Image (cartoon, rainbow, N blue to C red; front, side, top):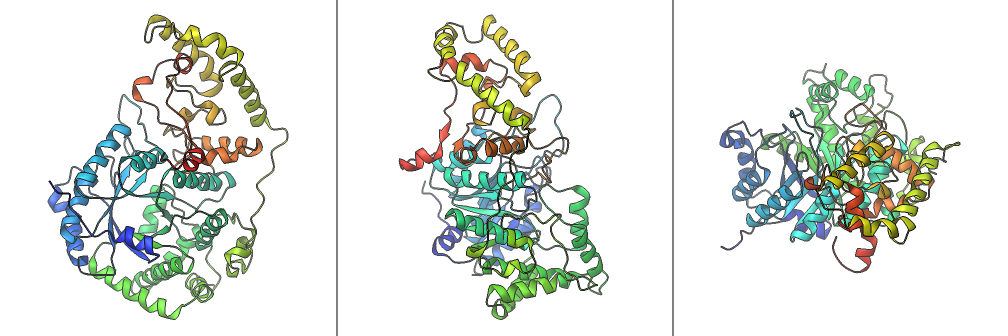
Length: 523
């Protein structure tokens, strides 16, 4: 059967440098009757079919609940209704490589090429009797890159205000781009200095993939909901909330101010060099038409970045006429962005700040060095330990009593010191000897976007990737955090001994992306 063909405006416009408008629709829960639940989406798709202002509809995955309707099926319905290629989100929440492979096959069979891959937020309801596993978005990018001619978007959040949180986002962004991401979409946020920082950093690093900004119509009710429910990765300061409460006292309940702020933000994205926007929380055509008319009017009046900044600061002034603070603390990679008027400087004139110096004494670094010496002595190829243990390990029957005994011993030795859960594939040498199993999502390639002030999205610990970052920074190995692609752990190896797997040569292959790119191959 001939593959369906839809107009791929996202790929075409990003490829030619034209601004992109993407409208996000939150896929309904699987418990909702499908046809009724997606009726507003199909209505929007039919409205935008012949409207050149709209280029793609994004279909979320496992956002509303842990069990939403199939985004591939919903995406196919959208494509049929409007003829324009949707952007289908694939979440790694409670998923694995096998599920992703099936989703990619179904996308291809449906004629759908555009996707956004994300690790996914914390599950809303913990299932009993098992631990939820997450498929890392970096692995999803690499898998999609080799699976077909997909146009792959990935996520990045610049709205982080600690060195570890922020640099981890940018290092993982670099890894995603090296693994095959074609473009990026940011988390939603209202600190436009952070968006300027992101684009300045990418230019400084020479990254080429276009970036779209995530945006949302922020009303007082929506802001209250976000803060009350602590939606992962979204920052709304007390000052911004107070401004929204003040606006809500107006006759229109602050809706007019919210529309103007959103329209201004979208114009600002274009002035800052973004490739487009993805709008969430608004899918009624009449509201979108109103917004686009405002955008058009502002575009004509704010023809350069300086004029736009003046309008933005004016829109953010509170009742005392002081600018509303949108950052919980002024941490920016470029020093001028934390200074009055620094926003007015061109990106090329911004000064990259120095990273924090190592602590003294540095217990994390000393522990890393001790473990690295041990690894080089016993486990590395060519080491005395490997020469002795490799032939012995190959004599141990897989799954036998001796193998199980070694697994028991490994956990007793490593769990108290490292948090080992006997995953069967030890990734410690690639994660600065900070075990990925101590991440509630089990992520090895970098953090998710849900951290806040260095704290894990789950709220009960420091993000383990922050410790990994500090060690790599202090040991002079930061480049590895954006270059080493660590495979996912296969479910069949969990509960087995990684020592015997390692010496048998049965571990998955860890990839150095720079070497693959240099040879012109895909990850």
